[in-house]
Image 1: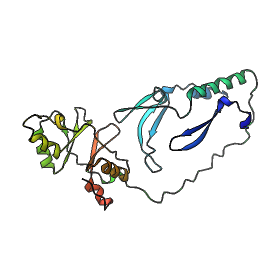
Image 2: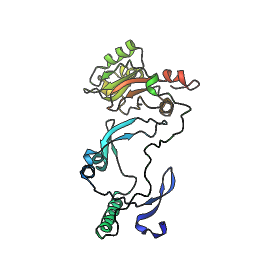
Image 3: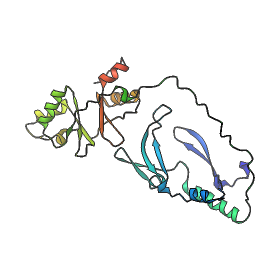
Image 4: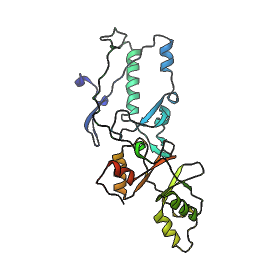
Length: 262
């Protein structure tokens, strides 16, 4: 009966992009009956590993962006694709501890005791999710895996030769560890040629804020990135920010006719 609940454990809320919702403080006591339960309840936050799932991917088997521990999540930030991303719980961790303390006082005072189960879980029951009628192609299905890259310390003339030899307009720039740090295009090299020798190395002309994609990203999302940023290719990187392919407007044009990219 929600009317009997204390107001501190019952709160209305509004989530941006979702709507009105409600927070309810619920405590579930775990009876310690044997050593197996003791082991399970003694697990530390750093020993609990979970996946960070990309819910922006419109399919049931969504890709994992990173594997982290609960301790990592509670620290306030995690690393995804070489970038530090802030973390926070959807509900109040402080309130959750308050609920646990309240429940503890009830048990110590004898207000809550073990009881027989009111309904047992049926282990044979299976959920039946809706069938996917249309599957959006992924970037990995159409990307070019023959990637020609260059390091940031190489001469601009080397970049020009690679662009001509590889018959491409885009060169992903990687550091000594093979991680993506920039991108160079034929337009960048052309500007450097007429700069009277002011620019000598790739790092002097490369674009550092690289718009990228991943192998599991839907192709329509990748197409939006091209249109919104007025570019014609995207480096494809894995979870470690290593270049595994390149996706061009030509590749997308085969699947999405009628669209135009620069």
